[in-house]
Length: 148
Image (cartoon, rainbow, N blue to C red; front, side, top):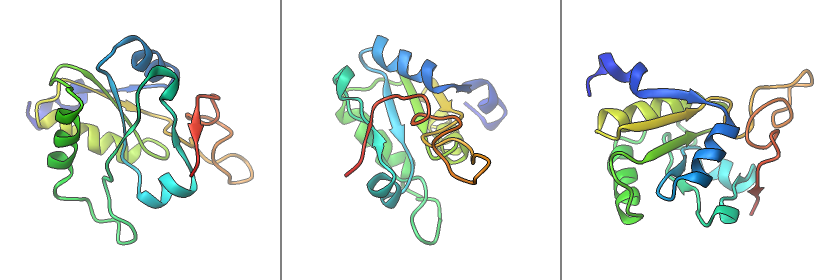
């Protein structure tokens, strides 16, 4: 799938659609592409209620924010170990939807056919007080999450 088809291959979904896909399709996966620091200090989606765990693979390294040149290879290996097929639904999430879109496009280019970007992300946009997590996104929707 070439770059000209990326927009058609990766669609934007809201968190409720992602949750529904994760609960209804046994091999669907949630891929969290944020940094280790974000997973540790902000929290991660808790898929325990549906018998899964989020696949955690950083798109960009902290603190320099360079894109991991081995991202596709790392994630493909994780997905293969989980028995994920090229036609299974993959839902990509980051803080607010930008990094996850780039990561989803990279995996679509690698041949994964059902890549979805969780557009509002884990924390969503800033509210009027410049805080995340209350306006939109995984946390604001009240979906399960955990912190270490």
